[in-house]
Image (cartoon, rainbow, N blue to C red; front, side):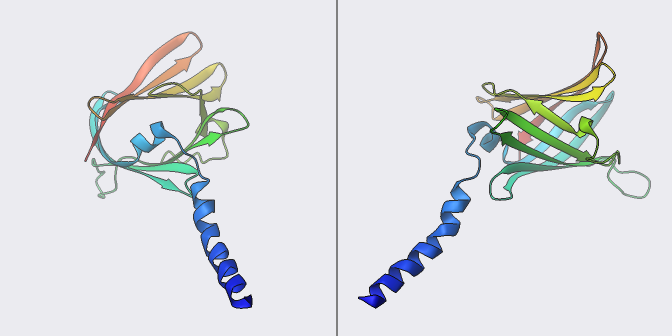
Length: 171
């Protein structure tokens, strides 16, 4: 009888990591962003092609995407690279996005954290950059074509300008 209890105890302990793993974010929209993508379109007035890999990390708490430009500088270094973390903030009831890239200003600045209210097939992040300005980064999912459309708009006071308009196509 003692052996049976030990076996049951061991089986329960072995199942704990699986239970913990399932407690991550369960989000259909973010699941649709997971995968390998080719990003094409216009950024800052220039035609670009970037590769983007999006995957769940840190116990399925964050969707991380790693974006790398195919365009390179004279030394062969990609013209742009970013690592982005998107998660769900239960306390605030909205998505949170941390954007780290080669511009080098680092995550310590508030403009690297954006927030998006939940909406069907859309993640509309607003990054408050202070001084009556913001960066609006909107991902819209087209279910029929399995394509993400991504627009970045710069807001300075009452003026809005489009900085980027790209599409993500699954590889």
